[in-house]
Length: 166
Ligand SMILES: [Fe+2]
Ligand SMILES: [Fe+2]
Image (tube, rainbow, N blue to C red; front, side, top):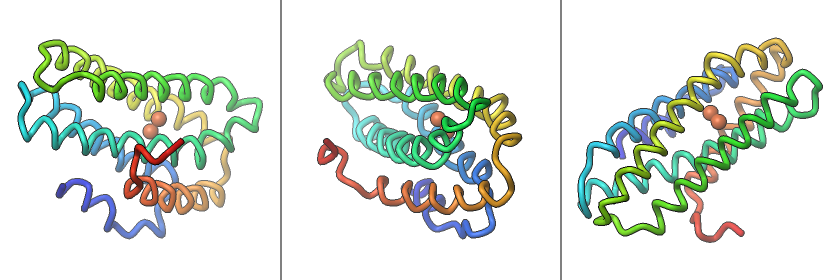
């Protein structure tokens, strides 16, 4: 819980979109690494899974809307956006599979490892490739405005009841 609290209470007024996206990426890496060290139907596994699921969900909603959609409207940003959105969808499906599998099922961990690998691959690609390309497309004003919009949306969806979304 402490990790989430840290992200939520930071003062984000002067950050640009890349700095603020990276904050959630750190949380995702940390939680997915901890999650694949759990075993069986334990409190720890249940707790970490809920935190990771909520983090990935809120981050993806806000990132889709206040990072990728504006990029998608440009020719130079179209391909990276398509690629990123398909990986968001892939992570969504793995989260769904995990939600539908008993925590005690021996297969649970292999799905969790697949999710962790996908998360790590995706974040690396964003930070080492997509962000550089986006940096050339967005101007400084947009980078700061999107950071504020992203952050407000992220907080909203972090607190939202996930099953209520339809
Ligand atoms: Fe991201
Ligand atoms: Fe992403």
